[in-house]
Image (cartoon, rainbow, N blue to C red; front, top):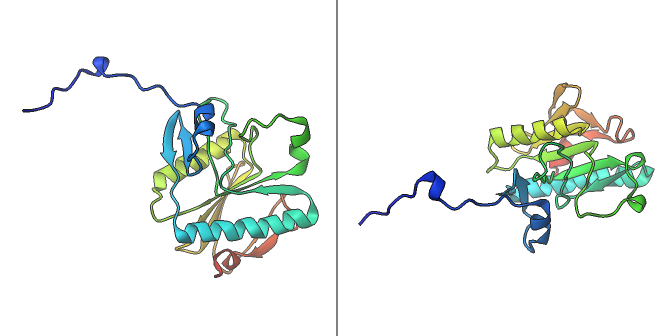
Length: 193
């Protein structure tokens, strides 16, 4: 006996999830919302280790200078003007302190402004087109720069809001640019064990 397929119009409509729905989920840390659909974030042991190291390196400099705040991968960004049901969670992000004052803003659970820097660390399960779409979303929303970190190739591709794209290899020096001027290290430091 075969199943009877309902016509498209007779199938029940699934309402898109909202940022409030995601916030209310007890196990939502590893998920993002993409146009109201729950999407699992890919991670591996290596990508998690590298993201943690980058977070620590940037965080040390941000704390030393007091110029910025560095956030881990559990912070969701709700700053996509034409996509109200969009929540993205970079592996690492950084916002200059002169751009945002937590004391004067109500904490909605999500960051309402674009970061100066978003870092995406590639894991083996990431698909190229998904990462490219996420980077494009960040830049369109006003993120200053995105670092796409590839642990397998030991490279960092920096995509900037002005359209520039630069590839840094293991022995190249990467800097914090205007968002964290004192930060500089060799790309190899991101992958050190």
